[in-house]
Length: 117
Image (cartoon, rainbow, N blue to C red; front, side):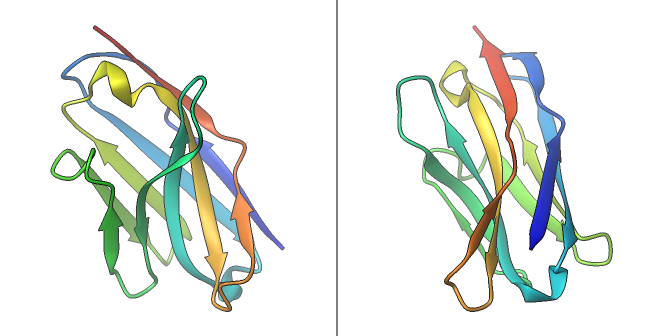
């Protein structure tokens, strides 16, 4: 089992920045990719970005160039630096970890990001 705890959400004005953190604990050895998803009110959960243990990244087109994911394997922590935030970035952001088998995913409880216009 893997436990994920997010932090760093909050209220920010449009154009501002926030950094989210996700600390993983438990069976860390089983994890390959970690990432962030988000769910806005009334919408489905969507991929924001992922990063593998080797550092390969994927970004949603809507955040490319504004958001940066990074990973500290020594601290079992993944970060999401969000710049130039827009009101449409408002959502609950969830940390995700995927086992090397690709068969099991773990989720954090989420952290709310609100961007005011």
